[in-house]
Length: 342
Image 1: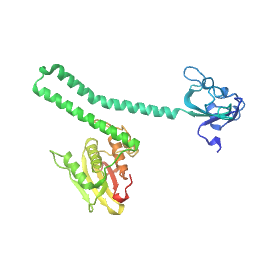
Image 2: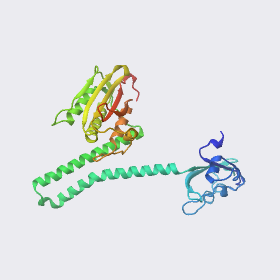
Image 3: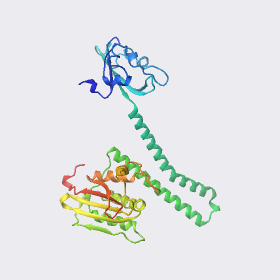
Image 4: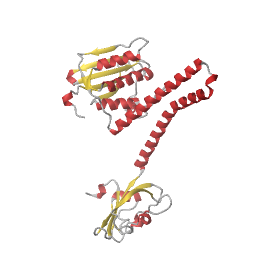
């Protein structure tokens, strides 16, 4: 393989520490002219330091040290211009435990790793913020009740305890969502599969959400048949989509379940009465912790919805409804039991 095609910078030095080969990538990193680095000593060709000013060559001593070493672990080092790089090396010996006859060093830019570290830090900060909000309410009311119980009336105590109970439910939901998101990330989201009637699932969700008010209507098209999946997870999906339509879509216009034998599955459509979702934003809706507008939740709902649907072998799309507003469409395959593989 031509090392000029290698994505990382490569420097090869002989037994005397003199550079014998460099690829084009390391020359671009060092802003060196073609062939300029050849003949340099390895310590000059790779003038990296750590944050304390210790040089890479003097710290790792590739030609000295333990004679059982065959490689140098990847670590962060800094160029004279202050850029961070990840450096590792292979030590080639003339025999096991013998002298080093060649050092093959690999250098890569640390930008991608730093970006991932920042994403993890942002994730931790977001999770901490979401957990702290309900915990603050719980801690505040319980502390007040414990220290000043006799100062409050029965109605005031009832109000405080109801608030604590509501915050505890919110905290429980958030933890469940975080665990579901973690399972999706790790590919460990499990389904308890069985026969599911998607129209019955949707009808049950609409009945629960409209309890105490006017019931929402469900349009069912085609001859119903069973979809093989997880009824609880599909209920979670429909509940999330309907609640999003009510909260962010200015109300629910209609819910449609259509059975499509020719397409091998069933379609669930959620129509809202909002302004719709711009096309350039439709994929971002499914990102972790993506929120929009006041009253937004944890930002994990749609991420989890897509994960559950895809675990069923289905797909979810966002489109414009004919009557205006957003249209969220889910297609779920039949997935008969003898065709399932977990």
